[in-house]
Length: 429
Image (cartoon, rainbow, N blue to C red):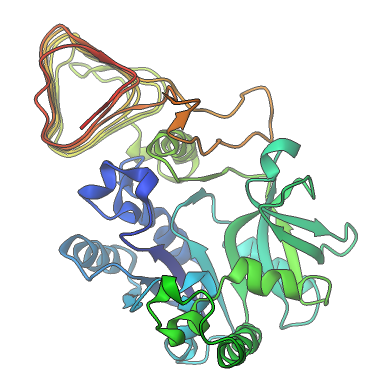
């Protein structure tokens, strides 16, 4: 039997996702109309013999998470449990801490995936690849090709081109190492815990030898220091070149979802994929309905005037109201928002219960990868460059009110703001 573990992080993480992560844990932010995590769960549930999905993170158990787990269990008929870490233990520390839960029932292998990746999740292909490569207890990393410059922002993999064995692994190198990057999706056998355990023991010995080094960060809690283990730097780097670690390269879609801007790009990739996986989720041009161009997801409870024009790459949440002559493209409109007549929304995320007045224009700058480079990835932009706000997607937090006939350009508006004029290139606190 198989299991899947999804690493969902915690409230200290996802800071680049503010102000959207104030309202909902980042892994539950809707991408292409469904929570980010649902894409993972759906693909896991399709794998034959998958018995259980474990979510590991350090969020306090909250209503949204519980509600998501209940509805996903019913929809996908699979057990889903949340295991809460007592502190951020890193990608390896979290699974090592809960190794008994992961190994209970005796799975022969299990997937580990990060919640903030958008992917086609080629899980069955990874299983077949594992059977064909190396010994039965080999480990598989999902990899993809990036361009030379961007590869240095990711974990880089040097492979043996005949056998696909990972010979060398470097997390975010300072010079070019390889254009094959780590996608944050892994297939492990229970033997991985011996390797993580060895690092844990070494950390404990180091603490006995140097008990006070770096204690400022951990308030003297040494146990936490030994348990905080990073899968990438501590485990993969050591395993590379030992005949245990292999890379399965996928040509399919893949992107990280680090900043709010990258959620719109991920939404585009998923909406495009819906043609194959969920054609029923894509809106079509119907008599008496709005004009749809390109891929658009509309929640059935949304109320949209037939003269509105939507798309491409738009997703519209529950209970949204869209007035006459409204134009929306490359945007995510979250539940309860109202776009009044003739407003125009481009490259923008409109927060929960926000209102955009008549004839207002809310526009951002897309942070898309270079369309002419097939291997380009999205750059995780810094908020500021040279003391100026980098032009990016415009984000309205929840309950923001934009008055009629103003322009909001390349700005981030924090929750509960009533604006009374136009703004550009600003963070409105």
